[in-house]
Figure 1 (cartoon, rainbow, N blue to C red):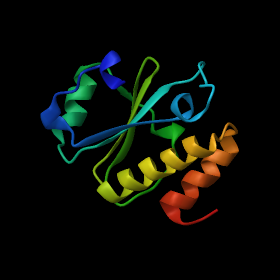
Figure 2 (cartoon, one colour):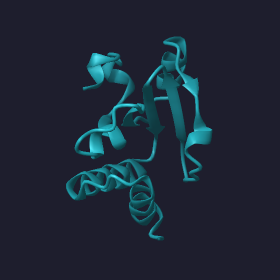
Figure 3 (spheres, rainbow, N blue to C red):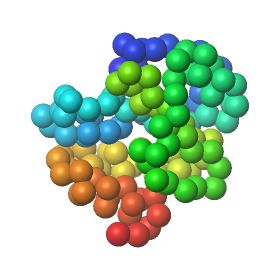
Figure 4 (cartoon, rainbow, N blue to C red):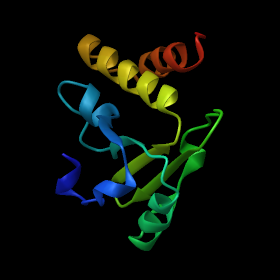
Length: 121
């Protein structure tokens, strides 16, 4: 649960969902980041997160979308921020299916996410 790590003011975001191998895999991967995808159309969110000590780590996710996509990290907490509800929804659906299938191999998860996000294999 995100509130174990940080409480983001509710006026700064619309939707938040747990993602990443720590959540998807059973048993969970424990030596990795704790990931959440955040849908927000409020530009003040990025300013607030930077003030809270988050730093950009976009190189971890070589993704291109129409709209905002940025990954911010503080310690082991990684927040994937987008202002595209369509992208957010696709990411959440990919996470749900990856968890249901218990995809433990990173390459399998990457392929599944590419399929959901870009309709490619």
